Length: 177
Image 1: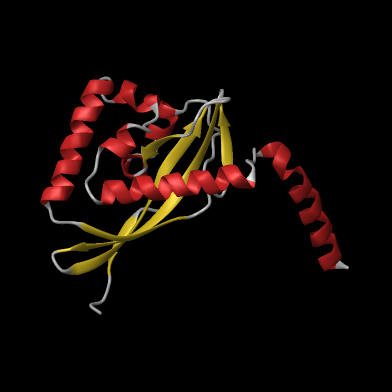
Image 2: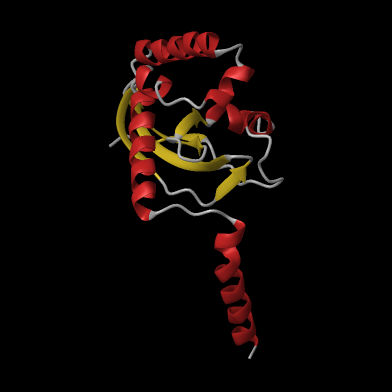
C-alpha cells in the first residue's frame, strides 16, 4: 500500500512537470546538443569564431561590451592553441531542466571532453548555458566562469527561478593508456 501511495504521488508530480518546467521538441533537443558539442570542440581546439557567432548577448553587459568580450575571448582561445591542447572527444549531455527567465528559455548543457595536454589525457567536465527568446535561435555562454561565480547567472538572466541546478565543472587526469 505504501508503494502505491508513493507511485501515485510520483505520477501526479510527473504529469504536472511540463507545466512547471518548459520542454522542447525532440528534434530541437538533438540540434541543441549537436550545436553544443561542436561549440565545445571548437573551444577545446582554441577556435574562437564558432562560439563568437553563437554567443548570447547577455554576457556583453558584464564584460564591457561586445568588442571587449570578443577581444578577451580571442585572447583566451589563442592561449589554448599556444598551449598545445589537443581535443580528442566531446560529449554533450541532455539538460536536466529548462527554465524560464523573462522572455528567455534557459538550460545548462553538461559537456564531457577528453583533451591531451603535454602527453597526458584529461577528462574535462564543464557546461554551456544555452538560452533563446521566442522564435530566436539558441545562443550560448561558456559555463566555467559561472561555475566559479554562481551569482553571475542571476546577473546574466535575472528572471531565473531562485533554485537552478548548475552542472559540475572539474578536470581529472586520466591514466596513461
